[in-house]
Amino acid sequence: LLGQNKKLQFTILSRGNIPLKISSLSSSDSSFLPDTIKDISISPGDSQLVQVSFLPLKMGSAKGNLTVQSNARLNSLQSVELNGRGMAARLSLSLDTLLFDSVRVGSTIKHNIIVTNKGNYVLRIKGISSDSAQFVPSPGSMNLNTGKSDTVSLSFTPNRLDSIHGKLTFTSNDSSDRSGKHIFLSGVGVHSVIGAIPRSHDFGRVRIDSSKDCTITIG
Image (cartoon, rainbow, N blue to C red; front, side, top):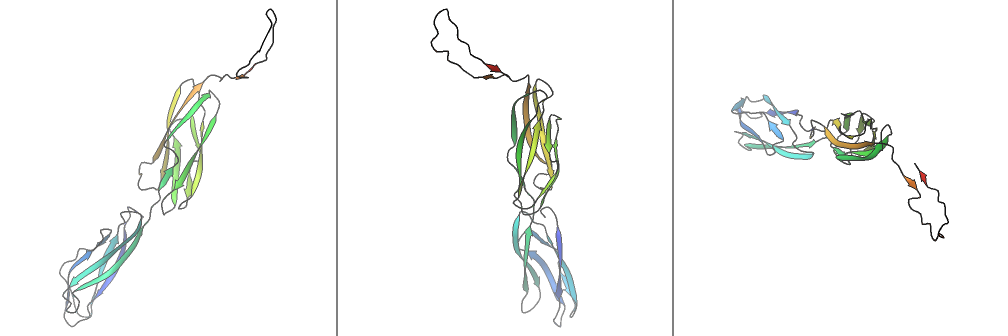
């Protein structure tokens, strides 16, 4: 996982008839960190353990070479190929700001938010929370495999006649967002919304001193 360290050990054997002297270990890729070794002597027939740490810097494959420099007569530079894969969950949201329409006080309107894992490791969302009681998410947590998406339903129920603001926070194992991802929320609580049916009506031609009725429903 990105930000975590995995260690592997290698054994260096001295197969000659004089002490093998290791002057240095080096890596061609900064994701692989070998032990700091200088001027180590290994007696004939003995061995020396060395350690290489893999600390991935980005998602995906990493490849490098570990080079051992010594006093070996035939091959003073020995190379070992190193491979690793950086794994990480990546939380993606379908929006970063959500503005609700005017909603009658005490009524509820819902909006769906699409959550996607764009990483190569299981996304574990441990908490989906709002800092305002008027905005309520459901569910409060979820897990998503690589490339998968799911829906969070957010309800807005204003309790007063006013503009209401809030923040929705997603807390997960996405190492690129230690403080969580946020969606900024806003909505307006209003009195009963009045509408008329029909919205318009043409009375046509009406003789003077006569009348013509039209029924309009208001609600």
